[in-house]
Amino acid sequence: MEKVLKLFKRDVKTSRLELCLISPTKKLAQDFWNIIKNENPDDFKYISFSTDYLKPLPQSEQETFDTLVKECKESNTINYAIYNNNSLIGFTKIIYWKNNATLEIGNTWLIKSAWGQGFVKEIAANIEKIALLEPTISRMGWQCFEPNIGSKMAALHNGYKILKSA
Image (cartoon, rainbow, N blue to C red; front, side, top):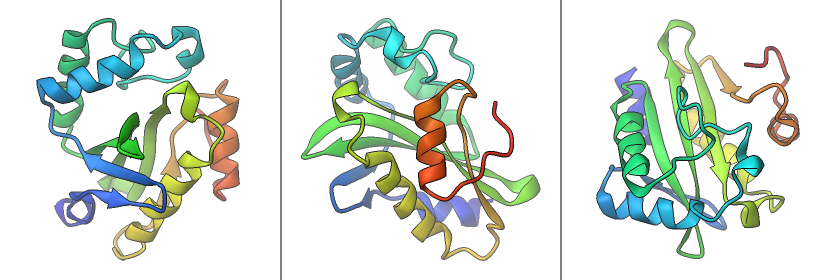
């Protein structure tokens, strides 16, 4: 597993985006809080900032920091902050499931002003290019909630098949 995740333990640049490895710092938590505190939580009802977080977005800067710390403790994930033109616009993670050699793109969210610009497709394409360098990855997966039509459409646009919705 370490060999697979090592491929991704670096910043990733696409044509328009920069995915920066997350180290949970107070400054990064403040940056995330500044972009999400004025977002409408209803726009994020199908997105979890964390896999076990019941509210769509953290409710304070401290909660944001605590969530970043928790996310970064997961041993089978790599977490990225997403930047466009040097502005923080979202979060994504990759998850490696050793039991079935699957690399999964999951928990991707963008601030609403970044929706509909093809950023998720761009992220997925670049993660896939890196994944092709590792022969032990037998398949790619995409995580989305069943009622999240936008995420399903992005998955289908990227060539994924909907096998099971969480």
